[in-house]
Image 1 (cartoon, rainbow, N blue to C red):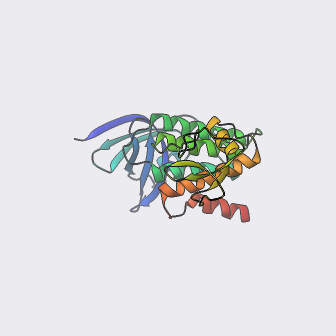
Image 2: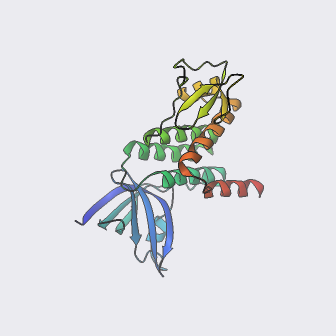
Image 3: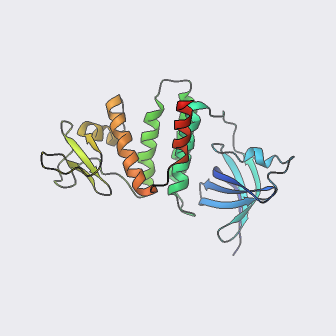
Length: 243
């Protein structure tokens, strides 16, 4: 049965050209999750739709159809937001790509939609305040995994059941959790301090060592779910860093 959705809050996750004048979109909607749709004629010279259908822009989108590919019928900006640039743009691209790669079609996550919108706002504000971008990225990664059902164990050693000790080191075993390092333990996953694990659990990443530990942890865990295909946002970030 065909459905008609009106003025749904959305973000564009991905877009690509389709035929001569159209676009294929992947959007993240608040009430319908990830949705694929075609925007017919959006690339015609006088179309205002093409300019609106940009990543990071909060939109109100209407569509119709059934099956795997719907048809966009209307789009408008939900609000004006300042364009992202530089490191903030690369970071927003990274968060967007994570959602695109991990979120299944029609898998509804209202809280994740809110977290993503707040993360984009924080990136815009980071251009004028002293909050390190890295903090927001690590916390969003943690929250994303939690919302998708891949939440990290951060409060106890999964082998012994004992609380994480800030003075010890642990290996984080994929889809298992932290295991204390001993003289005889075989490395299985990234090694990080108990202090860093506690900081991530409490969302108080206030020093460089913790951020470094948590970046290695998140990169390892996310790769386990995303696979070996590299993230284009990391390639973009590395290119900008070298330019």
